[in-house]
Structures are given as structure tokens and as C-alpha cells.
Amino acid sequence: MGFTRPIKETRGFKLTMARIKVHELRDKSKSDLQNQLQDLKAELALLRVAKVTGGAPNKLSKIKVVRKSIAQVLTVTSQKQKSALREAYKNKKFIPLDLRPKKTRAIRRRLTKHQLSLKTEREKKKEMYFPIRKYAIKV
Image 1 (cartoon, rainbow, N blue to C red):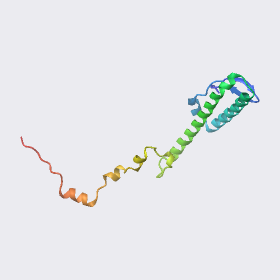
Image 2 (tube, one colour):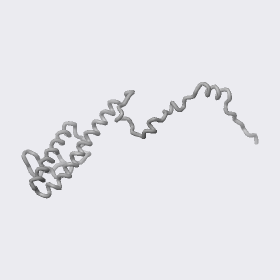
Image 3 (cartoon, rainbow, N blue to C red):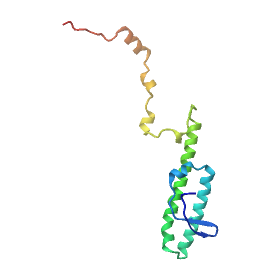
Image 4 (tube, one colour):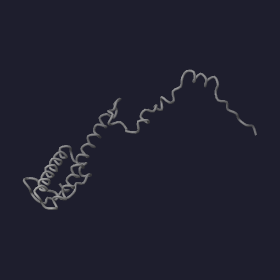
């Protein structure tokens, strides 16, 4: 793992200093991300214990970095899951609400282009019998 630099071994957990790079997380598999998440959560628990017992100040400042890393891992997993679902529902007739485009309430309720272009029988007949007159001006 090129993104971590072990500082100290504590009860089987390696405390890491460097922040995680998201572009590296995107290449990982689902199981790798789950393992990473477990490691980070365990590390956060250790740091919180250190905070309560009056640990070193560098450990206290590290809590923010670890929490951010956990958030990044969770974000990447949810994004991957959502993209997989989008791919699965790509050519289906109905798409789940959370995968549909957000837009605004008014835009979602608007008529479709096809519905707007439809004309009644009466309108069609009127256009057919009384077409728009075109005049050419003689110079």
C-alpha cells in the first residue's frame, strides 16, 4: 500500500500518517475498501482511547485525518454502488427514484416533448382546411 507510512505498531494495528488519495481508492475492489474501512475505524477507536487517557498531541490532531479518510472510503463505496445500479437499470423501462435525474419538482411534472407536440383531431382538420397563406411580393 503506497499511500500509508507506518509510524508505530499498536496491538496489531498500524497507525498511518499520510492521508488517503481518493484516486487510489477508486481503483480498489469492494473487499479492499471494506478492509480499509475496518482498519481506519479501528485506528479511530485507538486514537479516541488515546485522547481520553491523555495521549500525545499529534495523536489528537490525527483524529481529524482518520475521520476524513473514513468519509472518503464510504463516499467511494457508495459512488461505486450507485454507478453499478445505474448500469444495471440502463435499458429498463422503470428506474428507481434515487437513480433518476434530480431536476426540480416543476420540471419533473412538465409534459414531455411528445406530449407537447400532440394535436387534437379538430386542430389537425383546421390546419388542413385553412393552411397558413404564403404571399410573394412582386418587385
